Image (cartoon, rainbow, N blue to C red; front, side):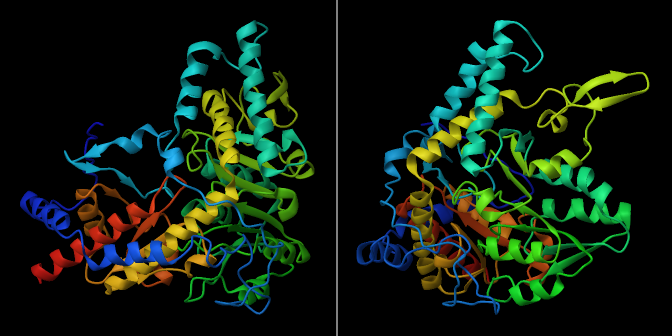
Length: 490
């Protein structure tokens, strides 16, 4: 048990006496309505009462809606319930105590997950015993490091069901992966009058690189609308596809709404229009997994730090024939076959897109994170997160004065974004931090979506395999305390 330093960031300067008072009030109300709501829900409902939706089961061909679904894939078998207590001991940071006496309640997993001891130990082991630069040496240690690096690439290949290992490119993260495609493929294949189709629910990293492409080439970036209920307007999406559409880029799961898009349907309709498809899978990879061959996607990107892995490593998957046709984006060492004073010849895949020294240790440790997730089972993880999301919806709705964004829990991932009436999101997050509850506040790198929702900012609680129903109770009680503070101040 140890204290973590409190990050000030851009938070409002609060009077310390207010925070102390909030904490005292919070601790004295252990039989609050929201706590009873969560406890009753746990007692009266089985975790699998009402199966969570399989990824892609969200909308029918007419646009879909709540209770109307047309599955892209057959329903998954019911997974065995997950007990987070079996795994919490693997995560050292979860034993942290904040502000002298508040156990850490980490509900910011959509931004970045925590790491288990197995991944941390792997990082230390590689640095202490196995590290050297890869692909460049003939000595034993370089061979050892190269073997581990390529073994991790194979683990990723299996995890996403890619056909070939060299279709897996190590990058620094999802953002880098998007930019590689926008620069390497986009600059060569897109021109004035062409169109790139996105959705209103995209993360900024899946918007800005395409807008930069438009600035360079004169192409048009268009956005399929999001409905008021948090689902993508699939009819509008289909109508916007046309002969000018060169690429469709969209998220598999919204990082704000939690909405799980119907992947196979959207990809098939895009291909029918003659467009390539780029999938931002940063939010779905840690919870639902990826099958690039079933999806039939052309490009897929995700990050290691959201799925128990280290920061600084991500993945770009691309079809072999498409990657082969693309010029390298970054130039330097490793990505070349030969260099002369007159020019260069690019290396084969995947080295062509891995210029310079790659993220060797993070890439190796990502393989350990994948092993950890696969031993537990992604279906179990997703079912557990849906259960927690249902509890959070019920508890927050019971409080009143709270707007929950996006679809019902059974139609989304383990993300619950909300707005507390009359309270700015940053103020909510700071009060929750006083109770040790870590959530995200702001626009979550999705400014166009917040504008569409007519919001300046929102709060987001996001769950993972190590979160508990008791932590949902603490979340609800802290939000209730926040409401009481602002009622008094009014």
